[in-house]
Image (cartoon, rainbow, N blue to C red; front, side, top):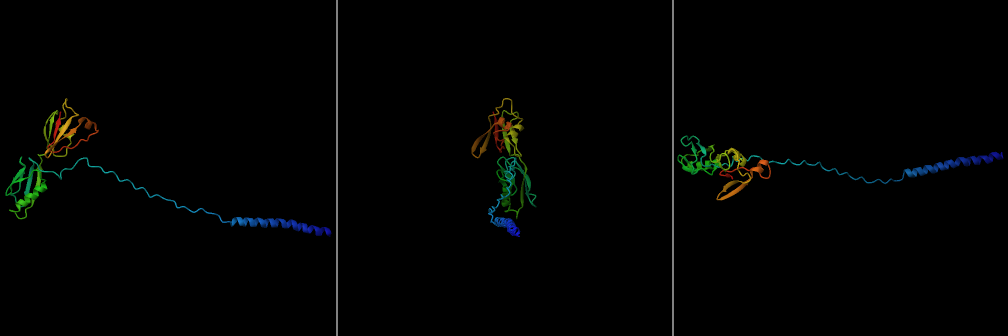
Length: 226
């Protein structure tokens, strides 16, 4: 009997020790699980806007349109039409003095004017004789725009220019340069009112496509090839 009483507390002691340890472990685990965890604040991500494509580079037209600014000159041929007035309508050349002759109006200066400007002046002059005249002016033939090519070319002379043309094109119309032409000293003499300018033209550089543009000629230009 004494042996049994001593053994029971020993057993109870051994059984209670793991339970206490287990409870302590559970408490420690729960404390760790419930501890607050620091979370870094979220930073918004910057998304750049889509790049706008660069606009395409515009190019100037290779040929200059001069039809809107064309001015009548000597030797041009004009169709002047007055609606319902056949006696006043006719085809007339511009005289060397720049004038044309029309019935009732007689002489009127045409050179230096655009067709629209000449039409307005004719309308004003005819109003004295015809009620509300309807006038049209059409350039039928162009002979006043001329460029001279002189010097060391195969066919020197005056050449009519009926559309925009360059210095190189005028030299080609003169059948090109002669064997002894100085290609580096070609000059275009240009009259600007009362002022005369000399524009250098280097044939060799233009033919090679470098340094100097092959510019357009103007009425009255004189291309001199030494």
